[in-house]
Length: 251
Image (tube, rainbow, N blue to C red; front, side, top):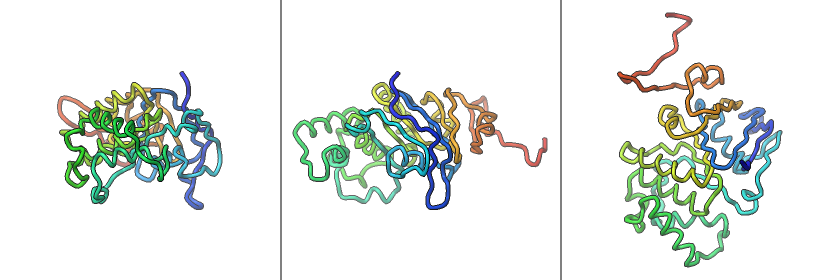
């Protein structure tokens, strides 16, 4: 299977502070990788390096030409409640995803507008196409921003905490949309919710300054400790529970 990009011994920093060190990762077509790790461990930095927003201080990233020449990468950043204050419609936001290909001065064609209608229909947004972002729910807003990320038909989709502001009503539907999209694009999804995303992804990348790749959707507490990912793992059982590590070697 063709690779989309490969990172070899990549390190990245903010000033003198190394955030990522000697990262190796190969992503191929139709991958679906869950990127997990503690807060401040470098997950968002990893996405910034892949997007070219942060230049590595060492190492190399080799991209498939389709990502470079055709700008075929989609990105859904973390959103906050303040992002809903822009006075633009759902349709305008989805269409804005084409600006990276057309440039700021580019005009939207009839074909572009038809493409926006198709994307909104695919994501269940047609009925709110003229609504403002502050008039819709958090779950709907995430789907709008997802529409903006995929309107350019990316081969690679990067998602940074997409579960934020998605209530339980939209969560199942949102991940089902990602499953369908994965048939035509690779996905890297940053998330703190290991239990939820393990049902949808194909493999894990544990990021805590370094990166450890786990080639399965099933990951255990022992795996997380071995990979240096000190995050909570919530599992399913007869009674909902969270397993906590012993204190100071206690039993």
